[in-house]
Amino acid sequence: MFFVRNHLPVPVIDPKKYQLTVTKVGSTKQVNLSLEDLKRKFNKKSVVSIVQCAGNRRSEMVTIKPVKGLNWGAAAISNASWAGACLDDVLKRTGIDIETVDAKHIIFDGADADPTGHNYGASIPIEMARLLKKDIILAYEMNGKDIPPDHGYPVRVIIPGVVGARQVKWLNKITLSDKESTCHWQQKDYKGFHSSIDWHNVDFTSVPPIYELPVQSVICEPEAGSVLEDDEEVTIKGYAWSGGGRGIVRVDLSADGGKTWHSAELSPTEQPLYKTYAWTFWEGTIPLPKDHKGEVEIVCKAADTAYNVQPDNVEGIWNLRGVLSNAWHRVPVKVPK
Ligand code: MTE
Ligand code: MO
Image (cartoon, rainbow, N blue to C red):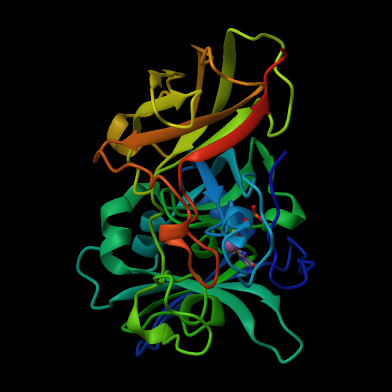
């Protein structure tokens, strides 16, 4: 199971006719690669990496004040193994050295377009591409098979540790440029503001686009409103993840709304702590408060390798687009009497 977020209709691409164009603004050189070129001419590299929409958990922000956007619960995030050619290798083969190239951004364009012909696109700063180097993949496989149409068939860029919006599907063009992508989702969306900025006074040019996402953790079990089996303890399970390859060092659990805490047990991801792109599953069995009165609020919060922590409530991080929703995850449950 993998969530789907498409801003535009899914394009149908004939794999035999597929072409990836690589170019640099101001250069007359342009290289076209077929799907076969990507598969045959470059080493296949794989990475296990999540894709998380910046709007994950938006529905919690809506409880404070309305926002514009899909009313996502906590499942606008999924994990997969992706395989394909390294962006760095592809650029090298086309005569571009990522370390020295005179450009500030890498723009990725998709084949999906609106009725006026504007396509989906995004960009990342060149420094980010330099840091991630071999980890950015032009993926043609998802979990060992062709990427399904909804997730970008035949080629999608995977930029580990970075918000879903930059991981362009149906990728057909890469451009080295001094400027960011001019697309709507780069310029006028997927940015974070404080809670006193709303649609009447927002200036989208005042902050940079979201790239790396903040630390996140969510309780998947038990579900909100469910009745626990036991009145003494509860087993809690969920996921945690952070942007920029920052691994999860701790997940804290509470069964009394955050007054007292217990440590969850983390399942290792098999990735180094400073290059953790997959999510971390965790689990813990913790005591219920004696004075529960039939209802408790269970809570989780995580810390990443930078000891970034989640904010304790969603009021303080409310924003007009309902993005970056990563407050302590609070789940009310019933305790049998
Ligand atoms: N790429 C293209 N070409 N078109 C899109 O609409 N949506 C982006 C990103 N890449 C999108 C895209 C957004 S906002 C997200 S959250 C992720 O794809 C979702 O990826 P998924 O559908 O594979 O889960
Ligand atoms: Mo998204």
